[in-house]
Length: 554
Image 1 (cartoon, rainbow, N blue to C red):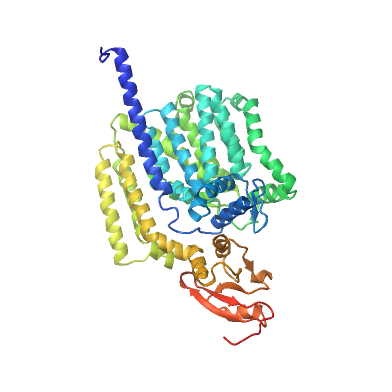
Image 2: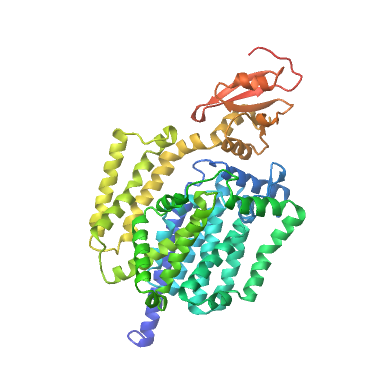
């Protein structure tokens, strides 16, 4: 007997088709996340001061089996909370200590964030869940921080899931979503501190004010949820404070309040700093996100009550979520690009909302918008192809290579424009083409240059070929990036000559090119021998004899 053609049969058939579609979506999303976030994580070494420092803290905590106190160089390092360290410790336990394993937590968190966007849209705004998830995964800011050993992606992911859960509760009334909101805000607090509940509260209060429903704030303050937040977030804070009485002063007073209100850590930027940062972080979707934002602000201004009383209030919530963190951190005296990472997902959700009715009605966007979008997306190819030169010489070359890259970008932009001029149905996949190409070029052509110019890994490898990890290493007048990078790759404390941290035993010292005389002056009566030069970073490294060894001419 067959039920095909009956209402029950049609329902079953529809369910099967829907299930197959969901499986296809998730497989496609998994493939893109695997490529965008995981592929080539170790193609270049840890960059900057933060990546190797955070990676080393997790390694030292794991070595001590200490899940409470962050440790760097054998002493407590209390500048950041613990969530990333826990994630990295787990990654090290499974895969061993390596630079790519230290980046794995951010890649996993980015994946969870993208999957959350997918399921949120499928449940509450079905039809464009794959678009929203792919757009979120392919933003420059998300790709970049998903490949970095830092606290920024753990905060962005937990905060994004929390805000999506809050809206799910607001629209559906189901308390399980509100419980998830509090759980994820607790994880956000463990990721980067009180900024998570502070930003969430700010966004919710502004939205409640816009709705004219102040009671919404009080309904959000749900006792079981607050207990979950306290039960998840507070035990670590209490434990680390009990073990380290200086934690409150170091973390809360200095690295939160003083960092926000003063230029204590020398990250001062102008008030408008985050405008260009946001425009860059949203690439390749900047043009359409900007259009979606402008349209929603204009609509809200023109017919406020009609929008706020309808399902369009999600758009208002997303606008507030996008703008509030940018304004909040613009007020701060200390500004770093990663601070506004939590403001990127609402931009892509706005874009999904913007595209949905146009695709459904088979409408096309203004040709000028399509052209600008295509040009911006395609132009990512040019710096990607020129990355080795940019990293080495710090400026864009003007010559044959740049011309060829520009022509290639123009061809891609023209192809995108021709494809999109009649409609936006293929927007996501057409735009992903230059993203995939640019990342491939960066990983295959640019990674060696990034490794040589910005990471301490190749320098540590050169030293290891001479020393085989037996001698201590010190540094003299080198950047913090080099010091922390050597500390991670050598797994040892790096003494600073400038601070009098000169080993009494024989050791290796890294210094700027031609600094042998200055090094010798720091260790009078001790033999100093030139070992080699690391040309990409203009550094020399020397062998220094132990105290008491007779000086000889070299």
